[in-house]
Image 1 (cartoon, rainbow, N blue to C red):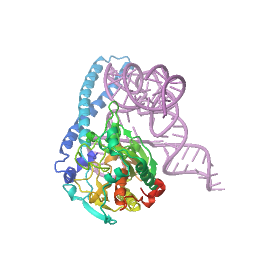
Image 2: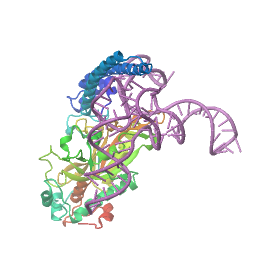
Image 3: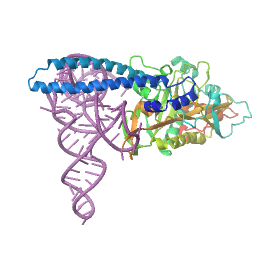
Image 4: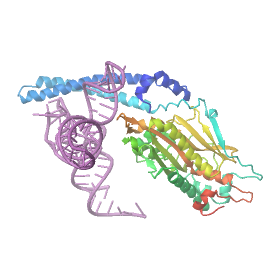
Length: 421
RNA sequence: GGAGAAGUGGCCGAGUGGCUUAAGGCGGCACCCUGCUAAGGUGUUGUAUGGAGCUAUCUGUACCGUGGGUUCAAAUCCCACCUUCUCCGCCA
């Protein structure tokens, strides 16, 4: 959520930044509501002050045994007027909040301006895509041949795009998760958390999934609960409605969770294999920081995610997402993309975003500034460290051998217990 | 799922309709006293939102689990919901 005071004081600037995302965005309507809202609040406050004073005087008059009928009638009428104004104020409050909840974050000045994902900018590449001197296979064929994934029965159990891992496949998936978690906690200083995989509407609103992206999520029928689309949701909200001390910051947290996405708008895309499915595993990195350190912490978090790809020796590149492609709540985002031979290109495997105070304002996560003693919103940052299913697919494709075997990357062997498949 | 009890500031805890501007205590902060330590004294102490100054200030309103209601007036009375605790039932 954007700060209404900031909008009020710099409407042109905010509009200009929003239009970098999408020319149709603007804060004009919210400014109009805000003006009206404040006017009504001032009126209501004034009447309430009068009622308070008059009611107290009734108490005093009664104590002295005087008749208060006339004053009481007057204050009763005042009460009706206040009620009307309060209804109007509530209506305007809700309208303003709803408008604000539907306005995305303003992009950071360093986010490249662009009109579509084609305007994303490559920052650098790491590693060399492997040149195969035999006919390589896509991971979906390899997974089936080696019985790592039972695609057909996964569909039978639930629906298309649900995955049943088996045997060494299941073991490899679990090995990747454990490797990521161990490295983040033991080498990079993150606290491991294991959150609920369902979250309520308030939590979903805190990180920005609700109200705008309701249709992207799975919702429980009789409960106010949604399956989480990423661990970012429960983990970022851990300190919702709390005030931290400055010494608590920065907070580093990592979590493994399955992620559930309806992928309703992606019908014909990536229909085969592990790249785009309704339920996938992910290890997430989340940070809460002060505003002063967030840019630096964002960079460090991205490097922490890159380290996983480096240790797995998977070629990748870093991209700076442009203003048209960064997520709704983000102000800046790096994508890490891994080389996928079957696609002949790099595919997203991690998205590392800085949200500034946008999520913190929605989720009401604050800290007390040591110098001023005032409360301020924290900055929130997160990124995948990494998407597990896509890592699995990248390993299977990039490590396949001419004799049909798949070599397990060195760092994973103590977790898998085998060195090839 | 059933029965009972309870939710008040950073924490403990008083408060059954107006004198609550939420008592008192603990903790925090500032200052004083003290050779050090310990103890003591004085003062101060939340959040949100509006207005005026527009840095360091003053001021209105709201907030006692959440949402409604009653009343001239609600922390206090009524209703619904949520959460926690105790007991019972069910259960990996």
